[in-house]
Each structure stands twice: as structure tokens, then as C-alpha cells.
Image 1 (tube, rainbow, N blue to C red):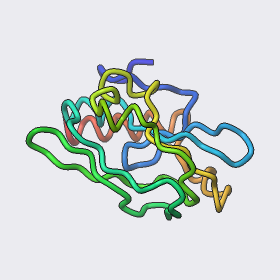
Image 2 (cartoon, rainbow, N blue to C red):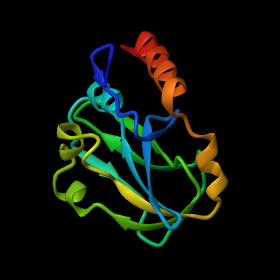
Image 3 (cartoon, one colour):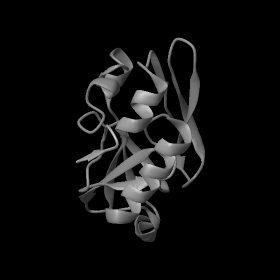
Length: 137
């Protein structure tokens, strides 16, 4: 779906720090960055993420995304153990820009599954995105 010129998937959950979350079952989620964040930042030249096996907490800064002139924060949308990093990102950080919803960053095994209920979806996610576009674009 198009929201004011930005791609938005209505089958995902969203965290207000521009991450999307895709539940995979068995308490595992894929995490990536939304199209708006990718376009606003520009082409990524480096993505710094925690190591596989690390525990992360919701709303904790866990890394950075970098372009030629900008460094942005990477915030954990949920709490849990990082069980896999997408190795494509290490070799080609711009893959996230090319396909924000097809190129996930990492997988988390949830430690507090109820946090999923606090993420944005449906109309709430669209309204949040429209507000962010008006404020930042």
C-alpha cells in the first residue's frame, strides 16, 4: 500500500522507531526497517548490529545504520535473544534500501511475547506513518 509516496505493508507490525516486525511462529520474529526510514536516511553504507546470542530489550539502542553523511540509531522493537543476523546486510547494507520489506535485519526469539500487542498495526500504523512523514519529509 502507498502512504504519501512511501511503501507500507499492512501485514506487518511496526515500532515507532521505524522497525517492522513479522511474527514467524514459535515466538520468533523477523525485524527490518520500513521504507520511509530507508528513503529518509539514504543508501546505507554500514549497519552495526548486536551479535547472535545477545539478549536485547524493547526500546534499547542496539546498533546503528550509516550512510555517507548520516548515522542513525537501530532500536530493538521487542525483547528477546538475537538468534540470527541476515548476513546479506554485512556484505551489502544497501540491500535494505533496495527491498526494505524483503530484506530483514535479524531474528529475535521473544522473551516477552505480550510486547507484540503494543506494536502498531492497521489504521494505527498508517496514522503514525502519516504523522512521521509530515514531520520529517
